[in-house]
Length: 424
Length: 165
Image (cartoon, rainbow over all chains, first blue to last red):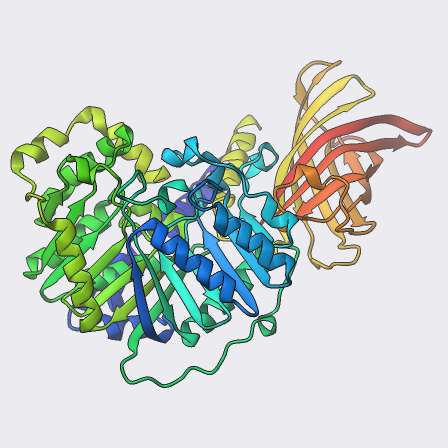
C-alpha cells in the first residue's frame, strides 16, 4: 500500500513537473524542429491564427506612448481592453488613469487586467507608485490576476504563474502590444530615468477578433462580471495591399505557445537571428536550440542589457556565460551613462523577414511560467526597420570575450541565476 | 500515515501549478478550527462541486488532519459532508477582504464525522463565505456534532481556504 502511494505520487509529480514545465517541445516537436519548413509554415501548422496588420506605429519612449494611449482612450467609441503586468499611478502616467476613470464614468466600457505583482514592483517605480484603486470606483472593470494574499496560501506554488501580457484592444480595430507597462519606469523618458522600451500600435480587425476571443475566455475564467463575445463589435477588415501578414501567439493558462514559437525561430532561420532580450535566463533546451541553429550556419546575435539591479545583473551574466558555448554572438551593453537605463525591449528579428514582437522575454519564465502575447510579423519592410533599430542599440557594444565569459561564470552567481530563472 | 499526509501536501503544491480550467469543479485547502472538546485542529479538505451552478451549487467535501489539545496530539476524525449555497449576492459585505469583486455566498452542509470506529452526524453553517472564481474563503464557520443524545460537541472553523481547480 505504502509503496503504491509513493509510486503514484512520484509518477504524478514527475508528469506534472515534466509535462507542464518542460520546454522539450522546443527541441523535440517534429513541426518545430523541421529545418526545411519556413516560420510561416510552422505558424500555420501549429495552429496560430493568421492576421493582417496595417498602419504600424512604433514607440520607443515612454512619454510618446503615454501620449498615444491618451489619444486612443479619448477617441474610443465603444470599448477599451487593457492588459498590463505592472501598473501603478505616478506623475508620468496619472493623466492616463484619470482619463480612464473619466471615460468609464461617461459610459465607455473599459476592461483592465493587471498582475498582482504590480504591488511588488522592484524597479525604480517602487519609489513613485500609487495604487490604481480609483479605476474600479469609476466603473472600470478591473481584474487583478492571481492576487497575492495570505487567503490564497493553498495555492502557494500557483503564485509563480503570472500575467505578463501587455496589450490594448480599442473598438475591435486598434491593437497595441509590446513591453511597456503602465508604471513609472515604463512611462518616463529613457533620457530621464525611464527604461528603454518599445510598444507597437496598429490596425487589425483580424488580430482584435483573436485577442477578443481569448480575452472573453480568460476574463470569464477569473471574473464574476462575465462578458460575452457578442458584447464586443469588430468591424469588417478592409483589404489593403501593403498589409503585413502576421500570426497571433497568445499564451495563457499554460498552453506553451511561446515554446513552440521560439523553437520554430531557431529551427527555421537560414541566416540570422537578432535578439533583444530581457533577463536571458535560459535552460538546456533553449541552449540546444541556439546551438543547433549556429551549427547550421545561422548567425545568432543577442544584445545583453546592462541591468542596474545587482542580483539580476549577476544572474543574467552568469546565464550568458553558459550561453557562450552555444556559439551565439553576445554583445553586452557597455556600462555608460547613456545606457544606464534598463533596455527592456523584447524583439526577435529573423533573416530580415520575420519579426516577433510582444511581451515575452527570451527566458524560461516567459516560455512556461507567464501569460504572454506575441505577434509574429512576416514583412521584409518591417524587419528592415527593426533591424536598423537593433543596430542602433548594438552600436558601441563589443562582442563578448572569453575573458568576460570566464569572469562571469562564478559559482557565487549561480544562486542569482536560479532565483531569476524562476522568478524572472 | 504521516508520510501520506506529507505526500498529499506535495501533491497539493503540484495541483496548484496546474492549468486553470474554464470551470473550477474540484478543490483542496486547509482549515483551522477549535471545538468544545478543547482541541485545535488543522485539516486538509477536498471539495467537489460537480454542477458548478449559479443556484445552490451543491458541493461535497471531505476533511482530515491533525489535532492537539485535550487528549494530546493525534489525527482528527474524517468528516464527509454535502452542502448547498443559500444564495449568492454581489452586494458583498465582506468585499473589502478580496482583491477582485466576488459574491457573498453563505452555505449550509451536513454529513458524518467518524474516527473509524464510531460515526456521528455533523452540521455546519458558513455565513462568512465569499467566492473568487478559483477560491472559496470561509471564516468563523459554526459547526456541531450530534450523537444519539444530542449535541456531542460544537466548534468554530476559524478559516477554511479552498483553492479550486
